[in-house]
Image (tube, rainbow, N blue to C red; front, top):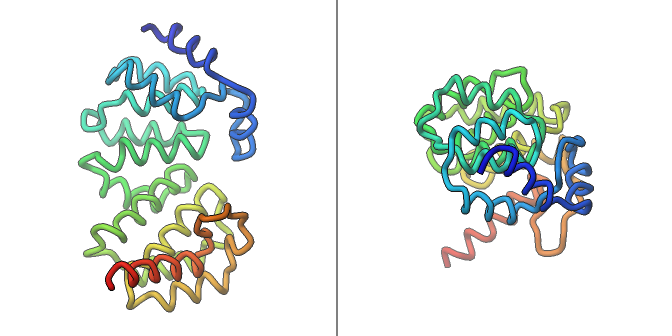
Length: 225
């Protein structure tokens, strides 16, 4: 399929309900409003196509960029190319898909994590903190956890909302995974109050770090019995 054909198909799949939902979370008007499941199904039909992925990404269209993420061959991209992609993100869902499906499996992700944690670009910083939360949960050896808590304590409350979400994820991850730092993580969350009143659906865990930490620690203890 050509770029034009794919964009036409995305347009036909779009709907106003999804567009409205996307706008609620900060999306602009360059979107069709395609459900994520339908984007995944289209990606399964198209399979890996790096050249098409590049063209889709360059449109700046939200749905085209989500599809592009699923058509990329992650390990063939250079760190510089990933840098360029990250700096042209315009929506949180695109940032999170790119991080989950491409960056987290890239051989240079640790180098990029360290670079992006210092970046003034909010999308790079969002991904940097997301990668840091993953490291806390899976491979925290060598991380300065106390230093991360110092920075979170100083920056979380005033952080750009795009960055605040994954920085808060890191705070919760430290509290959940590292008993030594749990009390401090909870205290930071309580004092800053970020996401304290966040609307949470029934059956879901609040992103408010103290509540999140307590729920996950309790769940772990129950699983160990």
